[in-house]
Length: 306
Image (tube, rainbow, N blue to C red; front, top):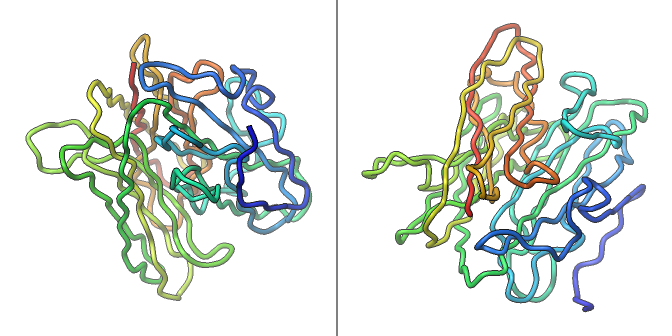
């Protein structure tokens, strides 16, 4: 089937299907009651140092709806256990969010990634975005929220789900050019409702590394769906260290979204990965660089459905 989509070309682009990237089932295979389909697009880094951006080569289409977004930066040859080993603090995500990629509905239909690197010479690096589509009759909503981001500060933004819906995934972005703002936290949150599950929306934190006042935005993907599992686990991150953690879904469930919260001081955190686990598709992976001189703590999240 040929579908219209916005054409774009990046120097050094290398696009592969999920099978080629991770060895998992081919595009078109769906999983679980929500009929989840997992797409992944990878791009070899062409500008060092500098910024790259990309969206899914094969976004959600037809009856599908976007339910999950993720992204990561790593070596091009990354394999299980899917842990990045490049030098601490040299690459990070500035934006992971939903986007309209194809010209026809549905909208939004893809995840969009913006990543920065400080490497001055080629290091066989790659940025990769993850898009999760649902082929069920699910009708998600996509609320967002925006705040001004003062210079030299960390700004937190929340986008809430309404009308009895529950959060499936989410993301965030900061405005500005290369090295101006970093996405340092992206996770579901629990409001002051009667429950204790973090199912009420999406929260992000952005570090503004410049003196200029900019903006920060949070995006939530919400739906009226029952049976979601919200799994989480705490972690402790050593100083000058990259934490690599994953949280799994209960047996028989597949991951729709996930993220992390963290307590690293302003200007000292760099989000390397927030992505689904390849092949088995039943866990969420996070990687965070702590470039500070102090130990810190955080929590990893996975949002799952059978």
